[in-house]
Length: 285
Image 1 (cartoon, rainbow, N blue to C red):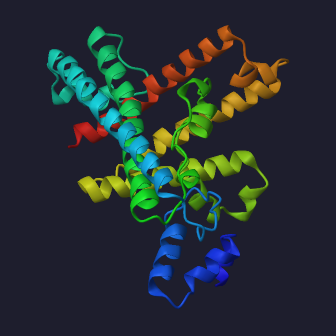
Image 2 (cartoon, one colour; image 1 turned 135 degrees about the vertical axis):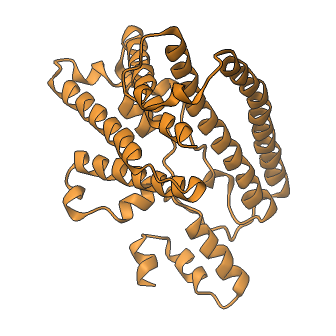
């Protein structure tokens, strides 16, 4: 009970987790366990109409199918480009794993493909899986409400700085769980909190690598996520010292020209960091 109270859960949901009916307990525990984003949960005792659930299922299934349909031609296009480069293992070797790539057309083209594919595939596959799980829990099991399954990702146009790429556009599945283990010293500092988030992200990615490939690549994971942290910290410092700080790096108040420069900046950072992060995985496979 104390553990549930520490999570700041609605009292009705805590009571349901201790209900005498096994089905009610299972439903409540799944709603707690399956809510890593700590979204506000509504009392689902008032069931929604069948028409609402059917409409929701059709919408989310259509969205998932659309994403998967788009992925097929884009994956084929990417594969054709990679085949055209006649890649070998050396193209992903240690001398190619720096942040700044060799300035050859071949290396630059490969980096563009790898960095773009990482964003696209991650966004597409996670969004499709999220949509199908939403159908399962809202329309099939009828355990959740539609508003408890908001999109994982925000609009990519909001990512005009690296901070907004990670903090606004990217999914936030891990934030609630990481906050639960946040050291007391990091609570008073946004910079320390961000450092905690990036460090734990690196560790969990290393664990995933080890499960899938038996290679943790912890050094590469730490380098990637801590490099992102450093860039985000630099953005914060630059904005703070800028006379027009509220305009320079924040999309809602930025001019069109500033936003375009922001997109170019984010693309450049991704172009430098993502291949240096992904190449060791390919090279060691």
